[in-house]
Structure formats: structure tokens, C-alpha cells
Length: 216
Image 1: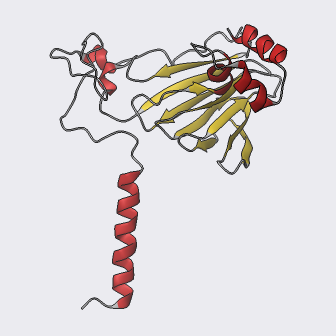
Image 2: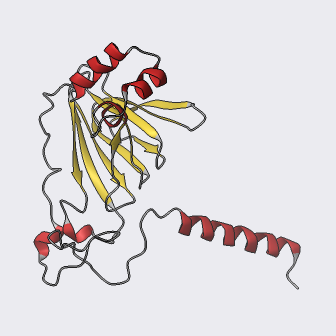
């Protein structure tokens, strides 16, 4: 018979192991490597493995340098996921670089398939996410600091400083996905009916159309 104290430890260890296994965003791989074949017409949960591969399938330089931020939002996200690095297929990890002009915003969005950790390279960002109970969890993060965004929750970052800022994001999915809230609602194809948006946001049809024209 297991003593009560030892039984408690065993139960806790089993729970920890169960939780650890359940938080993985992508399924575990069943072979050493499975380099994505982007040209394969077979559609599956992930990508088919291509027969011939090289070191270049595991290599990417896209996060090395800052990217231009001269757009409406004053920010740009450069992903390094399976579409850029075929060798990430089945590995369950990916990254991104975020560059911000002063005042730049990485607009409210979600990643439906991954948790995110954000590491500030330089500058200062105000970062936050909103829980399903509509609670805003936010913090100012600076060079060398990290903030975490749970899978599927709406989150954002904004550079309220006077200097450019940059950060590196890590995801526990080879292809985390991204859904920008404003773009998804006001620039969908076919469009979301004006009646839905007007009632949801308590604005007029004219205001809905004005927003749609800006995001088209």
C-alpha cells in the first residue's frame, strides 16, 4: 500500500505529466524529419514530406535585419514558420520578428494554434491580452524582457515610445496562424453583413462602410 504522502506526490506527478502533454499545440512527430513539400497537391493536417531535402530547407535569414514600417499601422511582422522554413514541418515550433516605428501598433489579433512568448530586442512596448472574461492583462516591456500570450486570446503590442522597437516571438506550433480582428470582421470575403457589424459595434451602416473602405 502506498503511504498517503507518497500517493499525493504520485497524483501530482501524473497531473503535471498530463498537463504537459496536453499543452503541445502540434502533434508529436513520428520520424526524424519531414521537410514540407509545398508543391504536393495532397491536403492534410500539416504538409506531406518531400523525398529530397537539403540544409537550405532548415535555414532562413529573414529575421536578421529590421523591416520597413512605413505602413498604416507603423509595424510589420516577419514570420519564420513552415511556409518559410520547410524543415519545421512536424517540429511544432516557429518564430517571428516584430518591428515597430514610434507609435507603431501590432493590431489586436489571435493565434488559434499556438501560445506565444515575446522577447524585446530593443525599445519599449506596451503589450497585453484580453481574457474570455474581458479582463485586460497588460504590461510595459523593455529590452531583454519577456511577455507571454496564451493560445487563442486576443492580444496586441504598441510602441508608445519615441524610438523604434523590435521583438522576437516564439510559438509552440510550426504554423500558429494569425487572425487580425478588425481585418477579419471588416474585410472578409464575402463580406460580413452590415447588419451584423452595425448591431455588434452599435454604429451606423455608413460608419461600417467607411471602416470597410479603409481596410479593403
